[in-house]
Length: 255
Image (cartoon, rainbow, N blue to C red; front, top):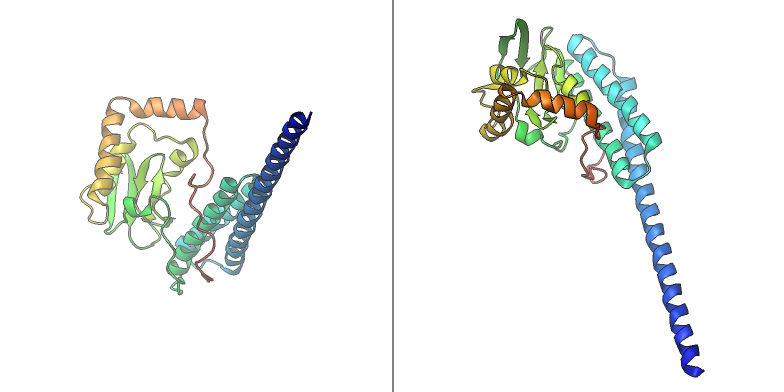
């Protein structure tokens, strides 16, 4: 009888301990989520304040502010749907990307861009546009430049789009956006990469070899067609940058 009672007490203690650990774990996860969401709200509010405070004075700054506003709206939508820490951090990343467009707009208007921002995922690997380029690909003209102009008025902060590095710089049109939405590049995209960036000093050799040259081979073999079909049919996570890096906190007031 005593042995049975002892056994029951041990079982009760184990169950109680398991319940306590589970509740503690859930509480910690809830606190972590709330912290991540609070940090995301701070970045979204900061981006919103900058978007509302700026008025473009030329085409490049107007376009950059419009892109920043788009990221602000996207971050707000993501915030409403954030249910996990990773999703909350995705909101931060989206807002953070918007601040790069704000910085570009301020630069285009001759204003102080503010403190340097920490690098975005894939930005260092992608490199940057260091010289003016004007090329024609499949009957269409494309431009790239390290500085804004009426011709090159679309800014990209640099990073990886659908597996390929796109250098930071100003472009005549946002030719990367279809791949950003669809998750895959179209046929012939490698020819555009090659024409725009081949031999450019700011684009790292490793990035070009891994991202552009491999893509050229894939395009030639119909790889991009398969990628487009797989991306469109298979779905996937297209929100933000898709990374899990926590950029919140520790950077101080940017503007």
